[in-house]
Amino acid sequence: MNTFNSLFGWILVLGVLMIPVLCQDEESVITVCQEEDNDLRVDCLLEPRPNYHTDYEFSMSKGQKEIIINTNISGIMPEPKFRHNTFVTELEPYGFRLTIMSFAISENTTFICKVTKIQKTLFVELDSVEPCSAISVFLLGYPWLNLLVPLCIIQLWEAF
Image (tube, rainbow, N blue to C red; front, side):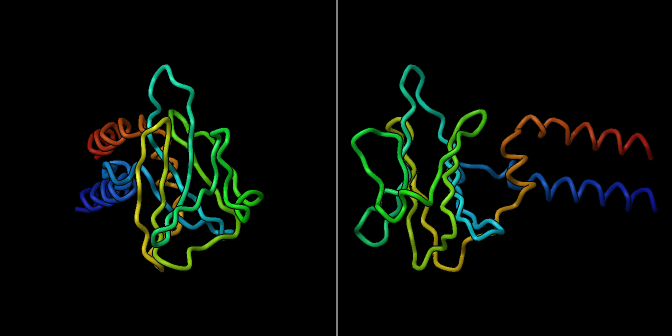
């Protein structure tokens, strides 16, 4: 019985860690979370079109007004209050991460991510921004780790 409980515990832990990866759907192409240092992070996991220069644009909409936060598209300028407190990093295998330093949303907000003419949006309600999880981000960044879960379960099963 003790080995069964131990095996069940490991399966439960691995399952909980994999929830963000296994549940990734159309809506999780764009995610918003608050980092421990109060930076707001917006991940956009849109795959760029092949044979195109990869343009990106992050913006947000409050009501009817769309505000450009950061972009690499020439001729488009971000809102002045976001020019010096945001940065974008490229994610592997594809996607972009926007970080807005020392920023929290003050009202319901729609975040918009555009990558090479493909656009996705995410509506975020005030007080519903989740803290960023290092484990979830790690697993989302390395989807091949999903293959290790069945192997770990088999190894644990054989060990008992």
